[in-house]
Image 1: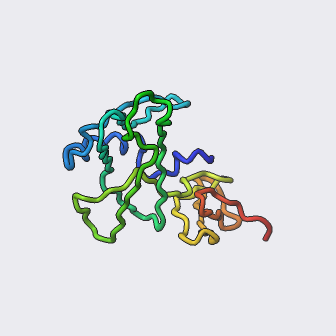
Image 2: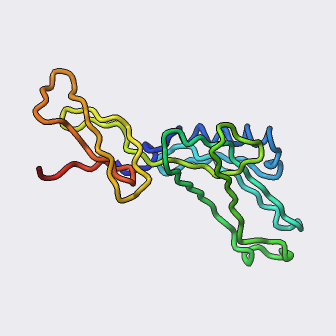
Image 3: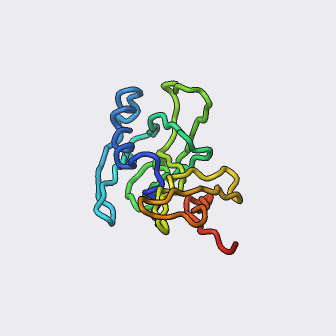
Amino acid sequence: ERGGEERRWEDRTGREGSVLGQCGAVVGWLADWDAITEMDEQNRPIHTFQVCHVMESNQNNWLRSNWIQRQAAQKVYVELRFTLRDCNSIPWVPGTCKETFNLFYFQTDEPHPAATRFRPADYAKRCPSTLRNLAAFPATVPRVDSSSLVEVRGACVENAEERDTPKLYCGADGDWLVPLGR
C-alpha cells in the first residue's frame, strides 16, 4: 500500500501530539501559537499549530519540534504541511503581514540532543512487514542510494514448504518489489 502512514517510524499522531508538551515546556516558543486538532479525510486526528497576529508589528513566531531519532534509517524525509493567508485578503493590515517563512534544521551525529535543536516532523521511508506467497518479510529500511534495492529473504509461514528461497526487494520509496524472471 502506498499510504505513507505505514512507513512512519513512530505513530504520527502520537509524535505530533507530544511536540506541544515538550517544546512548550522546554523552550516556551509556543506561547503565541494555538494548538488545534482537526480530522482528516479518514477521520484521523491532525494536530496543528496556528498563529495569526497580523495586526501586530515585529512578528517573530518560532515553532520547534522535539529531537527526532533516526533509528535504523540512513535517510530521513521531512514533510511540512502549511498554509499561508494572502495578506491582500485582510483589510487594514499594516506592512507587518508576511506570506513567507524560514525553515531551519540541525543535523548531528551526537547521541543526545541539545535543547536548542529545531526540526519539523519527520518520517523515514521503509518497506512495511508483509506476508506474500506464504512467506513473511520483516520491515526493512531502504538504502540511501535511491537506485539500489535491498534484497530481503523471507521466512515461510507455519506448515508451508520452501521450494525456492522467498525474497522480495525493498525499493528506495518504501515499496516492496517482486523479483521478475529467473
